[in-house]
Image (cartoon, rainbow, N blue to C red; front, top):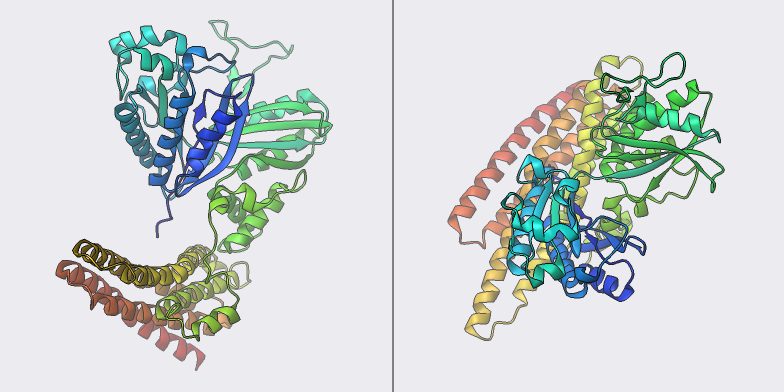
Amino acid sequence: MSQTPIVECVPNFSEGRDPDAIAAITGAIEATEGCTLLDVDPGKATHRTVVTFVGAPDDVVEGAFNAMKIAYERIDMRRHSGAHPRFGATDVCPFVPVSGIDMDGCADLARRLGERVGSELGVPVYLYEHAASSPERQNLATVRAGEYEGLAAKLADPGFKPDYGPQEYDDNVARTGVVAIGARPFLVAYNVNLNTRNKRKAMKIAALVREKGIILRDGNDEIVRDDEGKAVRTPGLFKAIKAIGWFIEEYDCCQISINFVDYRISAPHEVVDAIRRVADKEGVVVTGSELVGLIPMDAMLRAGRHYLGRQGLTEGASEAELIEIAIRSLGLRDLTEFDPADKIVELRIREDGPLVSMTNRQFIDKLGSDSPAPGGGSVAALCGAMSAALSAMVGALTVGKKGYEDAWPAQNVNAVAAQRLKDAYLADVDNDTAAFDAIMDAFGLPKKSIEEKKARGRAIRAATRHATLVPLQVLERTVEAVECAAVAIASGNKNAKSDAGVAALTARACAEGAYYNVCINLQSLKDEEFRTDVRGRADAAMAKVETRVDELTADVRAALS
């Protein structure tokens, strides 16, 4: 199951003093459908504003372009000066993968935006980091060398030909400057507090964990140097980590300030655990930590699974439980308030649908009303969610229990997979009803003229195709849900055998209900190629579910007899 793609974009604009210009730039992002503005950080001394927003890939590219267009209208680089290095009105614009998209996908977005900025706005574009067109252009400092003042000479050099846009240094380029567009990992800024005011200890702890490491000293506390006279360093414990130790007057203690350049290489929970061990050897205690800015959901879920695993419990817990255990274990509420809805990127832009947000009674009452939606499709998805939840429950009742040691690994993996399926099914409870509503909206379009009738027909066909694919993905996902139930039945806690059996039965109900919805929607479509493909996939998935559930049901009945 793939996640909904979410991309973060962090454009830096060379304007930090004119609030009207900044508001116009960020307003262009907010006005772009699908984009959520997360942060605006202007700096007067740097004469620069760092903007952070997120959304689906296509929406983020559109939002970035709209903001850059305003920036080029409002910022004249011929009159710009500030403390921060820069070479354009929009100085840099990196795309950052958050979920459901990788670095290569973000590099493609950078190229798409770069081509458009170069051709439509006439601004020279350099690609950098993961989107770089050559190894020499990966480093932003290399790309930006000479800054704005050196652009005329830079553009005259064939070796610095822009990846997109004009190479000539004309009046337009003199006004706009150039821009670096790229793709980079999500950077997590993180602080760990210590119960000491001794800055040397803090600096030593930071040096021991960061990638750059610590300068080696001899028995006389003299720096050890190589043949070229350079200080010799002992590598730190973690890659992709930058850290420094300093004293913070606000907290009246020392702190380790960390930048996780790529949390997938070195995760916050791994580094915090290591700092605790290293600090203990120095006689220092970690008293809490704090997140600066935002963090991806994935980093928090990894931490939650890590700490549950250390307790010998199943890692297949709900998203909410994993986040809570991560917050408590990392000490993220020891220094300041930590609201997941405000600090986790996905939760800033994601909300449960209206149906999933209902109480059981509200949903059932709505289901039993004269409203045609929610209907069987949403109920089928709900059955899938309940099936997966039961499989996860059996895993939780098995891992850590005496007598089931051999089953712990399989049950743990199974519970994690079941939780993932559960969340996907819950989303489809609302997706199915939304798809039905879209069909109704299409039928409500005007049909007076010939063109209106054609447009209405196209809209109805498109909405019906989509409404067919939603239950199809529910059905195909259920093949995996049935296997989760199979694992729960085979090696799960015997006292939960009946629960595991119900997981199989509700999976069957899910599949059957989704299959019905696929078939009824296909009846109104005339595209034979689409009908044949979808019906073939649906028949194949339904057959697998039927066969497997029949086997599992027989096994459960035999065991309970």
